[in-house]
Amino acid sequence: MKRQNVISVLLLGIIAITGIRSQARAGTWVTIGPDSARGYLALPEGKGPHPALIVVHEYWGLAPWITGNADEFARRGYVALAVDLYGGKIAATPDEAMSMMRSVRPEAASRLLEGADSFLRDRSDVIKGKIGSIGWCMGGGYSLRTALLNPTLAACVICYGMLVTDPEQVSKIPCPLLCIYGGKDKVFPADTLRAFEKVARMAKKRVTSHIYPEADHAFMNPNNKAGYRKGDADDAWTRIYAFLDGKLKKPM
Image (cartoon, rainbow, N blue to C red; front, side, top):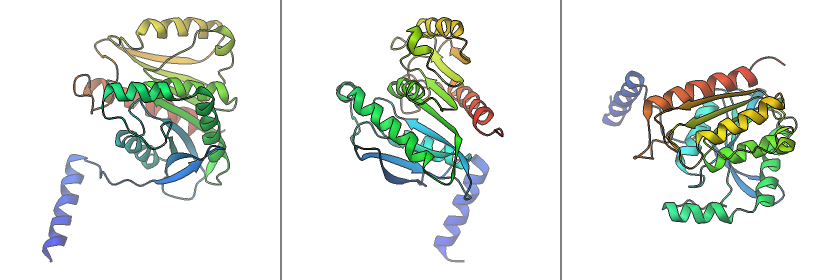
């Protein structure tokens, strides 16, 4: 056997034993909406139709961690579309990320989110009534906005993002929500989640939430060296997959 083939076999063996997934991306770049915004589309095996997800990035931008999450959702049977609110830019520092986040125009973001929903609905491999959204940090707030914009959204996951407490807005939420927050988060404190839950209960909205007492902001991202908490992140992913599978993979 040639040396290159031997190395390939050994690497495959290591992956099988350790559970390490390939870092190769399975997706493609696509154009979304009236503003010709950019998105990363990851497709599952088989022609479907499949449930689908709109995936929204953190304030860093559409970085490899987000496209990697889209790839993993595709591996789990979802058509995953990660939207790019920054037009291809990725922040290198927190100050740059904050500046880029503040530069996003709400009306342009809304058009992109609506365009992402239309993009998925127009695909023959997507189940029209089984589209959800998920986002982290800034993207968590935009995941909620996706629900507020789309009366047919079937599920929404908000990972430590901005919430709303205006009863009129909350009343427009069309789907079940899963909210994941850290108990020590100073960006979006757990108190904001409790305030949102109170209004949501009054509006008879279906909200499932979990607060990780020792977790700070962005605890799910392993690139966050100071705040990543593997145990909490693993548990959060388990809850997310179970929630989405329950809402988007069950027969209509």
